[in-house]
Length: 447
Image (tube, rainbow, N blue to C red):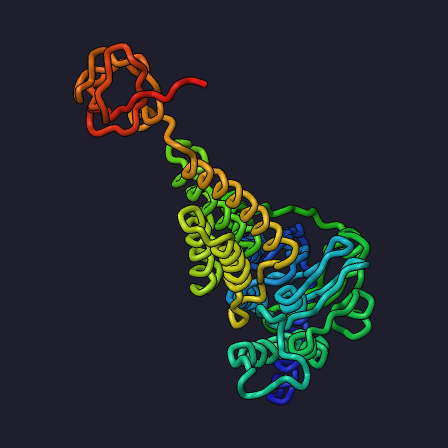
């Protein structure tokens, strides 16, 4: 065999090897499908849950990881960790915005667009990824100026816009719409999302979704993989108990309610020592709130205003302000609560002002008002116990008072000093108590 023939044979074998390798890389990925479910905010707890779900699916050789998503948004850092894990995953990731009526808002938009396959249920929506602050976002048109610019929010907007554009480009999705979702808070329905190539398809349920993606080829860090999931066994990855607890308390609405409940419990205990139950429950709520605030980015100014509000409510008991201190305390609660998690550069989660904060502060103010009224009424009431209650009581002189002697009053014998000479057995009235001695006078005649 000539040298030229050997070269041709070698090239032919190399071609066959490459073709076989390509066929093997694109071979359908079979096995079971892991299912993870996120319903609520994106926070360190849900981020840890999804990252572990990705790692577990890779270790098990799952055919795919299906993430069913319904979220209003979340922390920027947690969202970044999830997306980084998704972009480097060696298991196909399918994000399904479900059930019907679900929302992939803000951080959810980033996660959905980072999936290998993105799907939505009918009636669901996606978008509105603009970083939100207490003012509700950017200033109205025509009101921008050097004095009104929020540089932190502007910086966050630019960073997030660039980030979502890079994700959309990596997954072959609509880059222009992705940018508008951040800069203009654009939101669209499921059908519009498919039309604009924001997501890949609309599926009525999980089974329909898996049927539609059957045979689809996706890229796993440069390697093509064909999905074989229509008949695959589905295994749900449950969130651990501790993670579920952290996932609940790191909702800003829950965190601020825990904080207010904790302060209220301690306020009641300090006003009425010895009840114990309000103090214990308040301490537990306060500890949970502090744990949440170790996870959520909060504002010290907002927290300080809430503490000042408690101080003003307490001061109303001792200072006659005709309700001004009480009103100031309620206002501090409202402003402080709305500012507590107002960090648009770190999170798009805020406290719902009208549906959560106003009712909570209203209930707190009503209860605190009743406590203030009850305590103030008690302070204004005359002495009803102890020796001071003897003042004004009538008794009988046991001995002549000239000016000293003994009187029988309130079932007891007392040393007494009279303002004038009083004969034994005359009726007397106590006018003062000095140590263990009464000052008395002749009782006025009975009508």
